[in-house]
Figure 1 (tube, one colour):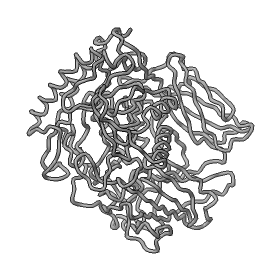
Figure 2 (cartoon, one colour):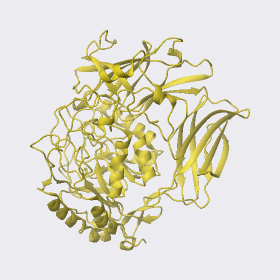
Figure 3 (cartoon, helix red, strand yellow):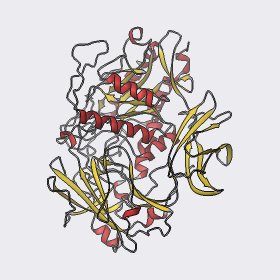
Figure 4 (spheres, one colour):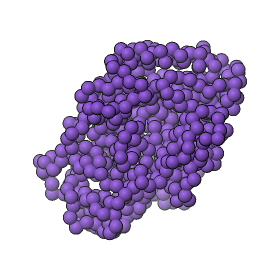
Amino acid sequence: MKKVLLGLGAVLGTVCGQSFAQKTAEWKYVQGKIVTPWADKVTAQNPLPEYPRPQLVRQNWQNINGLWNYAIVPKNGSDTKPTTFDGKILVPFAVESALSGVGRTVGKDSALWYNRSIDFAVPKSKDQRVLIHFGAVDWKCDVFVNGQPAGSHQGGYDPFTFDITNLLIKKKPLEISVRVWDPSSDGPQPRGKQIKNPHGIWYTPVTGIWQTVWLETVPISYVAGIKQTPDIDKQTVTVHTDIKSAGPADKVKITAWDGANKVAEQEVAAGTDAVLTISNPKLWSPDSPFLYDLTVTIARNGKVVDEVKSYFAMRKISMQPDANGVQRMLLNNKFLFQYGPLDQGWWPDGLYTAPTDEALKFDIVKTKEMGFNMIRKHVKVEPARWYRYCDELGMLVWQDMPSGDLGNNWEQRPGITGAETDKDRTPESENIYKTEWKAIMDANYHFPSIVVWVPFNEAWGQFKTEEITNWTMQYDPSRLVNSASGGNFHPVGHIIDMHNYPAPVMPKPEIFGAKQIIVLGEFGGLGLPVDQHTWQQKDNWGYQSFKNPDELYKRYESFIERFEPLIKKGLSAAVYTQTTDVEVEINGLMTYDRKVVKLPEAKLKQIHLPLYNPAWVKLK
């Protein structure tokens, strides 16, 4: 599956009775802040039209992004749909963003309502079901279809689906309403860098729908999910399928492809895992990001009931001591130093949401061109297409859990105790965290680019570290777990991760390296404000600021020159802060609007490539 297919509905999903000219006149992005080059490519009639779920593709779908009615109302008494609305909002951009066309803050004392009617052909056959999918809605939402409850969901970073078949009315437009409540930094829920009063490293709140919404028609028995686990040592891939309403005699056929060549196939009963042998596998790596295609079909009495397209990669992430007994991070049984930027995933015009699919891919492409082989996705989760691009381009990913319920004490020095504290979370807060962390892992298990899970960043809401880390390791033993990046340190997890600004350092391997992989989870933060490309004209912030690109490069190069002895001693990975400027932070390798790359890509790549020298480390 080299291309993600578009459905007819992605092009034809229009608001009932509304012309192109009317829709264009009702929306324009909010002025006053810098925007990316893609802002002017966003249109009200067709925002983000691409198929949103590349890991599970089927043809019959309809994109329902576009102009919706919205209203911000007092939270008390907001249980019923408003009789009047404040105006139009462009979905899927959060209400606070410029691209939403609204640019308003909601807050804990208000609720946000969405409403839209669309043309939709109700299936004639009783053997078909209609699903509504939401890529992500921050934070708590209730969905109504034709005035009836369709379902509720809590969690700002995981996709969810409701079966709305029984709520459809023939020969009438389909009316969808969504009520959202998001307390932002006033609540205990995961929120990442969002705060009600943005400053420093904390950014504008994101409320409501911020990923694609779409409809999909499926048979009664259908493939709802696929989970692939490769084993390069055994040359197999285990494929688990989630089949809804399977018949007793249904068979599931899983076929693996290398282009047009079938490399493996197996037919199993529904609910049974398939184990495909992939002889002489082409291993996935940053230098060779090979992806196998996958076809999954449900057959009943020899007739195909449902079929989906997917893909997988043969890759392994593991740990092993080197010749000096220091634990190392291995990719495909070989040591590879992992080096990449801290990637916040924020946009000046879309906040959490990239303006276009081209923009979504842009940061990854630039990161690759700069000679990095890894990205730490920092306290945010991206749309599925972002991870697909990492899979295609060969970019390793460390995936953070978005933080929330902050307030405990932080000790950033490994081996020192007495100052650190765990967060004393309420049972509700703990349950919210655990539920969403599991949902995030489930939703993104598919992507081979993800090689490390990071449950906590620093001490931000860090609680029951050993319990959470051990659960994460058990739930997904196919990846490494970095229990708390730069956080309060516990003897648990595969990795010990120190943060230090600005210069690179590492914990002593003779103390920590026998049991855990040593990484530098954050360093750098070198700032350069670029006139006319900053969020605000003054009072911008960096860990260490410079006046021109030459000064910045000289300092950055001096940091890179320090890595060779650290890697030889025991350092397995490092994360530089950061990919782009974000709001008042000007620590990026690129400006927030992506219009200026502060340091030349080719120049960076030239000094980064020696870091991946395999001769620097010998394994035991």
